[in-house]
Structure formats: structure tokens, C-alpha cells
Image 1: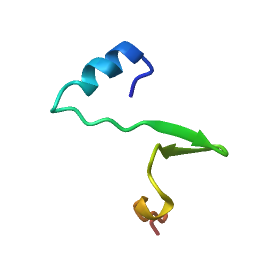
Image 2: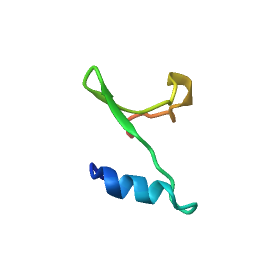
Image 3: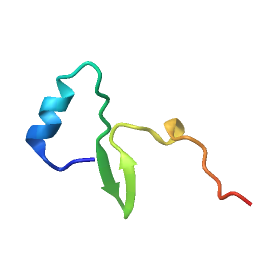
Length: 46
């Protein structure tokens, strides 16, 4: 995780690097571009 734009730009150029961009919407952190139906299921363990 980084806020350093130059580092992020350099890493994005690497074919071995995957990036996820995060957004905050209504107090909830979300993956940018991910739809509600794309989210993995989550439930609190018993």
C-alpha cells in the first residue's frame, strides 16, 4: 500500500505487479472499479 505516486507509477510498469486502487465511499473502503456483485462474500466467523 502506498500513497507515493512515483512509486505506484513505477510499479504499474512491471508485468509482475498487480495493483488495486482504493476509494472511500460513505465511510467504507472499496476497490475502485469493483461492483457490488464482484465483492467476495464476507461473514463474521462463529
